[in-house]
Amino acid sequence: MSGAILEALDLHYTYPDGTRALRGVTLRVPEGSRVAVLGPNGAGKTTLFLHLNGLLRPRKGTVRFAGREIRYDRKSLGELRRAVGMVFQDPDSQLFCASVFEEVSFGPANLGLAPEEVRRRVREALRATDAEDLAERPTHYLSYGQKKRVCLAGVLAMEPRVLICDEPTAGLDPRQTSGLIELLDRIARRGGTVLIATQDVDLAYSWADRVVVLKEGRVLGEGTPTEIFLDEDLLRGADLTVPWVVEVHRELVRRGLVPPDAPVPRNREELFGLLPAAEAAVRLEV
Amino acid sequence: MLHIDRYAYRNRLYGVHPADKVCLAGTALFVSLAGAPPLTPLLVLVVMAGATVGWAGIPWRYYLRLVAVGLGFLVLGLPAVALQAGPAGDGLLWGVRVGTFFLGLDRAGVERALHLLVKCLGAVSGLYFLALTTPVTELLRVLRRVGFPGLLLELMDLVYRYLFVLLETAGSIYVAQAARDGYASWGRAFRSLGLLVSVLFVRAHHRALALFTALSARGYNGSLEVVGPEYLSSWKNRLAVGCLTVGLLVSWVLTGGGAHVRGHP
Ligand SMILES: Nc1ncnc2c1ncn2[C@@H]1O[C@H](COP(=O)(O)OP(=O)(O)OP(=O)(O)O)[C@@H](O)[C@H]1O
Ligand SMILES: [Mg+2]
View 1: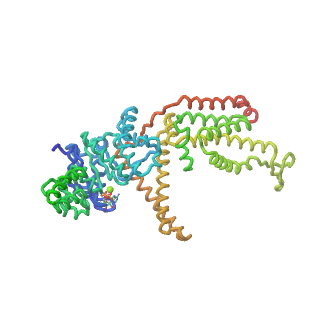
View 2: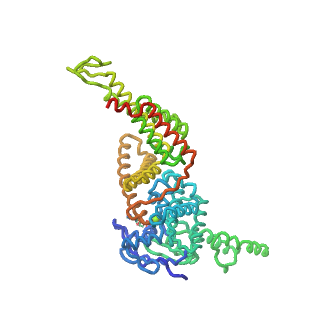
View 3: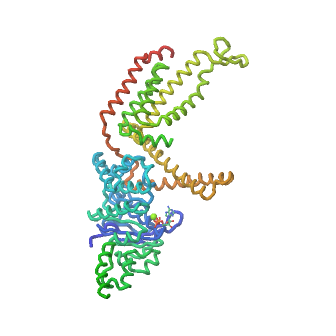
């Protein structure tokens, strides 16, 4: 396993109003991995993410980027934020510009690139997020899902090493959701590291390499998707449901349609791949 | 207001370089203010109304309504310009006696008022052309290019963007309140509205904080620098705008240029 690009060690954070949002969170994000952070509303996912690119400073504990503890002076924070891009949960809090094109250009323009290079990156990011046709529209007439795509484009255009997305699929239609997952996959395949917060257990199960379960500011479990989603006590404790692939597989095993020793399928295709053999088995019995 | 904004993004002149449109509107403004009334400003009005309705494709009903709004404001101000007060009642077209003074209209006053009216209408037609065909964001871009102070431009952009966020927030709070009968009676409506306003302020504050966080995440360092797209200047459009501009200037010279200004200061 390659080294951790981002690490959080025993983070504690209390909001000014006294809400204890993080109570000792430890997290390790290996370079090039896809990590899904799951947890009920108010678990502290957003708060954790805000720590990972230095937007919040922990009361206690440290954040490490590429093996070094992050510092909170202007210059170090600038460098960190170049490398760790963050897409926010609420697009309206991120979109400040009335023009989509200019909005997306904000990040790369801050990197001090030449205007030509900025424009190239903007166009590329808009293409990647399937938002090319929005470039000429004002941000205030976009739908929620369209705004989300523009937000993502605004961060992609900075070409960060680590991409953090807070609930990227919430509010997207099915086509946009699968398009987004494909895009995140493409980024990960090119060696990028992707970290998402999500409520979607199916997505976390079939997409992620590692899953982290948060509840009430603590890590309840961390591991591969199979480790996490086969642990029923953990799921119950975190108010999470079982991914449908796992549920269907379990039922098939219970009815003897699928051999119990085969590995649990990760996605729809793997599950369907198990089925013809099962059909043959049924026919044999009859 | 919101309609104007929508038309600005959806008119046939959307792709024309904003600097061209600013240039045309600026010429219209200049010619109608500096040209000899009433002919020159009226000409400007006709040309700009034609460009806005015929060329940019703004519905004429909507355009007439906008002009009527402008006219309304102007008419309200005209009596102050046209009315004369003096010790003698002769020479007035119409007048009333107020104590030892006469208050009334004389020929010069009426003429002055009418000239002012057409000048303003001509100038307004130029501004309407700009407002209806050019999005605010593009105007800001032109201003940036001619060296307008960056801080002011950023403020204008933020105000413009967050005006819509605030409107949307207010709208959704209103709907949420109305759905729970918050506006069923006068008393309740009063209370609901008060709540709405106070909640709006709190939300606006939170939005500002969230915005700052989000901007910081993308490397905000005190200045909101952005890069706009390049315009594909079309020669046809540029030529058309150029012809109109030159036409306006020529008509200004032909109708006496600035001569009348020197005539009666
Ligand atoms: N600005 C703030 N001030 C005070 N408390 C806050 C603030 N932001 C979040 N909290 C509180 O901190 C806790 C963690 O919130 P956080 O937003 O991190 O949760 P989350 O896991 O992202 O939830 P969700 O799934 O709803 O997005 C919650 O109890 C929340 O009420
Ligand atoms: Mg959240």
